[in-house]
Image 1 (tube, helix red, strand yellow):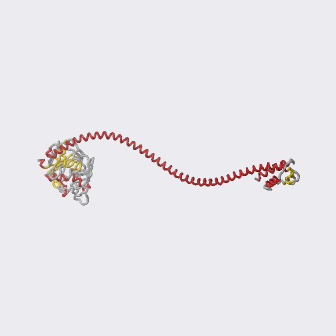
Image 2 (cartoon, one colour):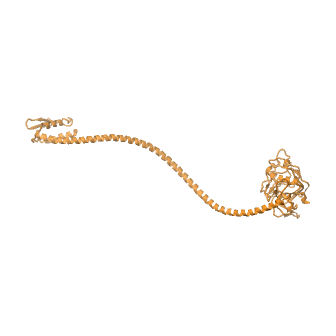
Image 3 (cartoon, one colour):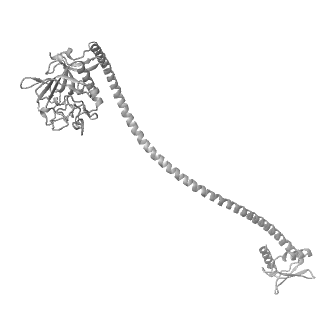
Length: 436
């Protein structure tokens, strides 16, 4: 407002500087109003003109101590009316500006509040942003981990698909194999029925020895008194004649003979291959009627020999399956089993030998009627070549423990003297009456 009044006084001074003396009719109210208006102007802005009333029609306006303007009161009144209007307009404008300033100030306070709220929200957002950033990082790590797992699972899936493809191919092959095996099952069912019929026939015609089968070789059923029937291998083409029963056979080392007492009691192996008939069966056979024992064996250099005992009896399990009788010896090897006469059978878990400081079955890696320890060892370890070893198959004629050869030959070989000898190392027994 001060600036507006300074401008007004400057504009009033301009006509007075030209000492214009127009006839004005000033009124007393206008002069009083002007005086009131001019009194609000501060002294620091510019010198205020002093207006002196003249009795005549002119009014003197003192600008300063050097300048005095004379103007008629009518002109002064008109001039004041004009400028008072302008002052009113300026006052209205000022009022508007003050309202705008108030509005701006109010808006400023509102903006401050908004700014504070914005700052608070910014802090909250920053905190949330930090939290969400950490969560996003965690989720990103989880995504990477899951992506790696997906890659692993994809690789596994591909492998499984390959395996599935292979399995489908195998399934196709297996289906064909199943059809083939089904046909074989039908074939073997027929064979089984034939064998069953043969076994029934053998059951009906079961005997206590192999003598009824003469020179024919095969597997037949034996039925002893108070004992379950069992199958045996009957040999009709031995050098000792027909009607012999094989009780032990060593051919190629395919069967392990280093076994415990219970297995030697029951027997093991296959009747058409390597086997041991079983101590309990030997006891039942030899106690049911007198039997003879025939042993044939062959060395790796082709030499072959035999040992024949005309009385062969094995005791019961309570007696340790003692070699109770051997009878007289006959053969072209040696009487190597004689020293084992009246001895009990020994295995690595049943020590029945005469040594007190060791087990002969363990020492010779076998099972036999050991004494101190052995002069024969036909159930020992099988070697593929002739070796000088205490754990090998040996007989007293070759007492340096050179192992005997064990192999099968479909046909008997002719020795220089013309005698027939099998290349199988076997032990046979037959009732004594078979030689009569």
